[in-house]
Length: 502
Image (cartoon, rainbow, N blue to C red; front, side, top):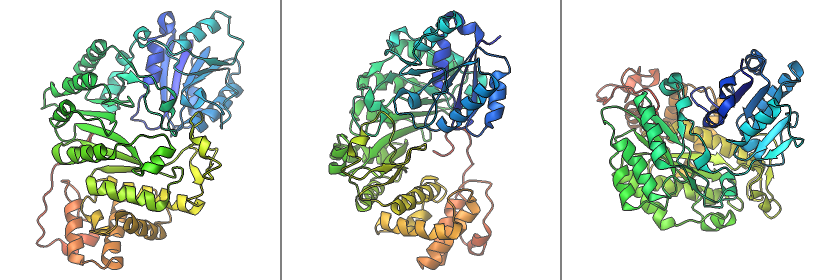
């Protein structure tokens, strides 16, 4: 009998929850009566409730995040209607800071902070009929030395079909006001020897993808080098994929040397730029060393095969569209890598709210708590930029139009020209979702040849080279008249965890 069910709703089927596995690993004598059940936000809520209650658990622990908080609120409502005596415990970022902007108070207990050890203590008291009187439990920060590692609890199916999340440290030394990580300024590291032993076991079981959730992977040079060596020392004939989030101004030679050795498609680095405007960066307590950042991006672009993922944010306090556009232009000039364009969010517990009055910041209280308008950007501006971001992702970031998308701006201003394209394509689709690759390509072809009035033959050549670079793709009908005399250099399609990177 499973007295305790650990559950959450992941944002995708291919994701796994490292948090649930930490809780399970540290349940001690209660572990034999506990079980992990994971779902995705696309699953029917009543079906989730049915599966959670089928074994009549005493306790259900649920991880609450920005991507699932609305669904969890509905789930709690159903669980309590069906089985009011089942104790529901919530944890995770969405309940660790108040105010709660979604109704979560119908849960029995809420653990705020790192619950690795606190969850066990709470379950023990509940099952001993000695529950605490307080509904909200503020967990003390545990020593990482006292936490059992979770990696043996990834199943064979997880290893084969899903992303494996891992971490070498917790915390962040920076104070970026939009980010929850700034709440925990102290960096704490796990015992690296023990960690690498666990990774070796995962590797021996067939694990070939490791997504590190550390906020500042390259802050500790010794640790970073040993982790990079772990992968570099493996057989290069075995494809693998690893992801790190790095700070952009801290790439000493030892790390550069190792990054340069990774084969294509094996290494992804996520770099939070957010803004290149020093005044705006100062507004949000973000320290920028622009010369170093640019130098390191150029290095990654020109001297490594790493897949780079840069982040920019729309709607930061005081930043205009012109300033954002300059940021985008600069990054495109530095690198051909993926540039993720996000919309500012106001997370409970962050300090970004101190700008609300001065910059007229207005946010939605419905997840994901996006900004709706501010003194620089109207509601219409924000809506346009949300569509801009989506079309940028579909064309520029996807890799499907690697060369042809650049014809939108050629040697001119990137932001202004793509802005015009995003306005035009939205008039054709009236949507940013469920647009097939065939339709998207055809619209791009029409825009370049009819609106931009570029040479049809030149546009067709670029698009054929882009669209047909993967073996097995059929030539789209709108390009068939131009296929003559064009040599197609295609390669075998790829699959697995680094498909987009390849």
